[in-house]
Image (cartoon, rainbow, N blue to C red; front, side):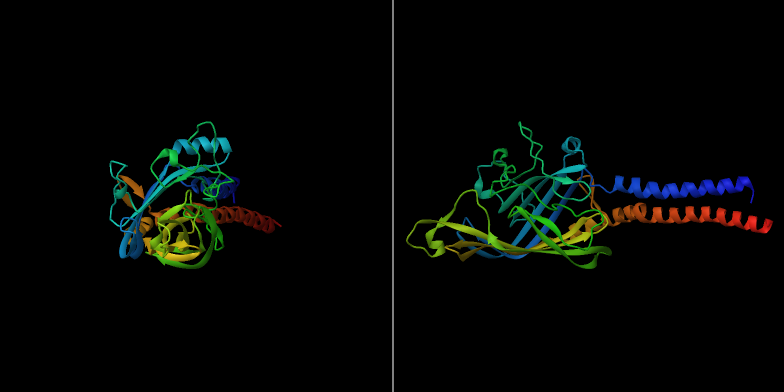
Amino acid sequence: MGTRSRAVLIGLGVFFVGVAALARFYAYPTLAVAPAGQIAHTVSAGPDATIFSVADLKEKKGVELEARRTVRGDVAAAEKISKALNRKVVVFDTAVVTDDSKNYKFPDDASLTGLMPLSFVQERVVLDARTGEAVRWNPSGGDDSGEYISTTLEKADRLKPDPKSPLFKGHDGLVLKFPFGTEKKTYSFWDTTLRKAFPIQYKNETTLDGLKVYVFEQEIPKQEVPLAKPLLVPGSLVDDFSEDSVAVQRTYKNTRTLWIEPITGAIIKGEEKQLATIAYDGEDKLTATQVTIAYDDATVKKNVKGATENGVDEGGYQSKAAQLHLIGFWVPLLSLILGLLLLGAVGFLQTRRRTEAD
């Protein structure tokens, strides 16, 4: 082998080893972050639910519930907080509206309380862009970029984190996604109703629309829901006919199942089996909500294959996972093998040449 040919092979070998290192240690970490400007919509359907009708003061069975979630990234806040904390974070504003009518729209007049949805919650969360874990950010001095939670549209009703508050101490655990490179282990996942995180365990591996996913399950045992003020109902509703109005307690339990695409950590499908009751003197008296509610087929398909909603591309985690796996695994592996083979060939041919010379 001539000197020039040997130099070319060495150069190519070093080049491919460099490509492997760049792909694995620069390109992959750069790409494996949640997009700060992400917008996502999910729709969950809960057929044959039982709810307590405040208007009718009685339980209603056979109700079809629909929950619509909107997630919208705040790019400016993410950049500001990332700089302040010296770590890559994303900031998402989320809103979940649940009602017994499809495509529910808020009334123009907020005083029309009878037209408000059955349930509404909005949150601002700050997440580590790579792990999906909640990051505490509660600035002072009128800075509104921090996390909060609220069950109304009024800005004044937003609860800010307070370590001493029974209502909201701050977000904890995983909130809207799992880590890039999700493992088959137990994580901690946020529950909005109780406003704290609970363990969520890996159960098995399966496929959804041809996409490999990990199944996780979270059991939230029955417990009382923290209330900002006493929940009052007519005494007759809870079999206390001696009082016109009595204070009751809301209880809640849930079995949450999530189907996770492991490379991106995206939630492809979610299902909850909720039971909320109204208890009096420690005894359940009424069913507030009993429902099995899960992403509808269109949402699951969008998350797997991708779709355009309001001019914005959403979902498509099958192709995103494939691209990320290519950059993080196949490109480094094949480039490293090719580079080492080229360098090994130079060494082998050089050794052989010396042996023949001897």
